[in-house]
Image (cartoon, rainbow, N blue to C red; front, side):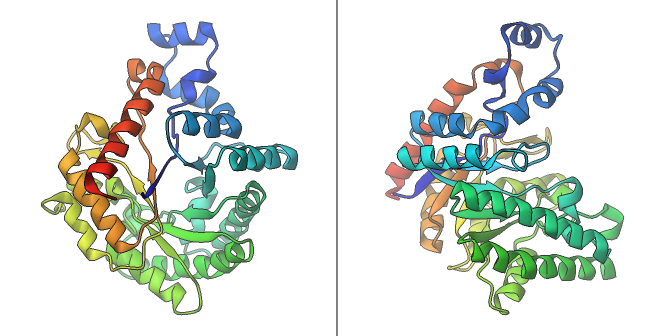
Amino acid sequence: MMKIGRDFTNLLNTSFLTPDERNDLKSGKLAVSDMDARVQIRAKADIVNQIKVAKETGLNHVELDGGVPNPYLELSEGKLVEAKEYAAKNAITLSFHLPYTFVAAATASFQESDRAVAVELLKKYIDVAKILGCNNVNMHPGAVPFYQAVGEYKKIVKSSVTKSLEELVPYAESKGLVFHLENNTAFDSICFEVAECLEIIDAVNKKGGKVKFCFDIGHWFTRADTGLKISEPPEDIMNEIPKGYLGQIHLNDYIPVVKKFHPPLHYEHGLLKKANLMRLVKMLKDKGADLIVVETAVREIDELLDARAIMDAESKFLRDVLKEAGV
């Protein structure tokens, strides 16, 4: 059976609130965004808790979220080793999602000095992933202002991202880590098309790299709100990805028009209904993917406070999908 893991995004945040903070959240005195800012570093730092919840909800993998802000460069080696040993004891594998905003977004920069700084920063996170015993790392292709995501600038973007990967991929491989490139959202203006990502991956791999494609179908669905078409059925986008490119993939949904990211999959409120998911996982297996990382997130207060029940229900739903699909 294909492995299922989770990037917890914001699903653990409310468990780190004090009783008074929970009451403030319920009453509206504490905004959801303020709650995130207050506790997400603590939630991310408790890697043992992430492993524990993954085990309890029937998963066998955790992707650690390096989105900014994060605590990972400040954690002691002792804490990292403790998490590594706890994961091994509980048969949970780990991977690391590299930062993709602020400095890290400059992996696509036209300015060589900026690009070089971004690469050196990401190498530090790769070092952390190594200590944690992660099996892979995943990177977004960076970002540029929308007005510089056209024409000649776009060519420079591809060149910059390719150059960054040519430095980062062998560094990760020297640490025993498989390197993944993930497609951006359409709102990021660059590297959101499958063909763009595969072109960059091919350029790096022709020079000896072994980059895998972490396809994020929810990111691809965002094109619906930028005037671009979605395939029908939506999972047919998989036909554009040749066999052999996929490693781990990100599974999340999207609700167009209201622009709602990552709704719980078992709600079936987005573009992926159960029948679509069953067909999708079969296609993923045929293409060679071996790990599904779920990236559900919620923003409603009642859902945040009930996140554990949502995770339990979604995990069961996905196990049923895989079982019924014969994957």
